Image (cartoon, rainbow, N blue to C red):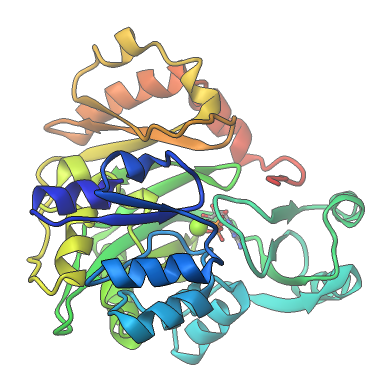
Length: 375
Ligand SMILES: Nc1ncnc2c1ncn2[C@@H]1O[C@H](COP(=O)(O)OP(=O)(O)O)[C@@H](O)[C@H]1O
Ligand SMILES: [Mg+2]
């Protein structure tokens, strides 16, 4: 929807392919194809209608994307999609290319998970190798009891990535864009807070040192280069207590942690998609004001007092128009802009209290409770 809006502003026509009729993007697209992402005929229709194709969701079949690639240019390509949608391949590729990651092991089935924990030690986070996003398919294991519970409820014969669950100093992300000519620009570094493994808030600029920010930007640029990405990609990173920057995962698309760019930058990540995939230049984005982005999940919507929220300084509301609300589904986000981060924080504090994500929740989520299940 956001890409279509930017494309429309720049005079382009868009065709959107989504399995769900009346999907948010259909409100802005010139044409909509409603079909599952495995539908060859739909792929053919899209390839016939489009001059250039992009995707903004990882869990699409890379075979289909590769097929479209045979007919029309697709940015970012099916190669990086294949890597990013498979946690094992992603980790192995990152390692091969020399990027630092958390310690992990790849296993199949529950018994091997136990072995892996024997090697890595507790706590760990078990992630399904495929189809995970927004904390889905993940379980944090702190104790033997957690593992038993996981064995009863979530174990399957599939492939898992077992990672050391590390005590993070903070999480950062960098959205970067690369043109067809190989020119890279980076959006400002965002500092992310997750609650129950779902992104809750992004703050820009982050509270980390300039050295750590520079390292995050360096890594993000190297990812764009080494994976030869054309388009937009977000690199999610962990900062350890020792100040080491590790790559967590790659998302070859506009990213939730980059939504702040819509309001706080002179070019948004969505405009950057349109420019790069259409062969236009994109200049290094500038941050116009300090900013916070807070996600609005289904469970937050009923608590939010719109009158009160929109009466706070610097608040902007984005709702995506998803038809069905679920407690942990991302339904929209708010940005808070102001002259200083202090001023941003005063509105953020009130908003978070209002949606039940205040300091008390933050404190309890620091002492991680048992396994988190997001199925
Ligand atoms: N190994 C880990 N150590 C500590 N926290 C983790 C680890 N793996 C994931 N997390 C937490 O869970 C969040 C979501 O995990 P991630 O691997 O990015 O999956 P998703 O695809 O759901 O975004 C991370 O941003 C982080 O907050
Ligand atoms: Mg993630």
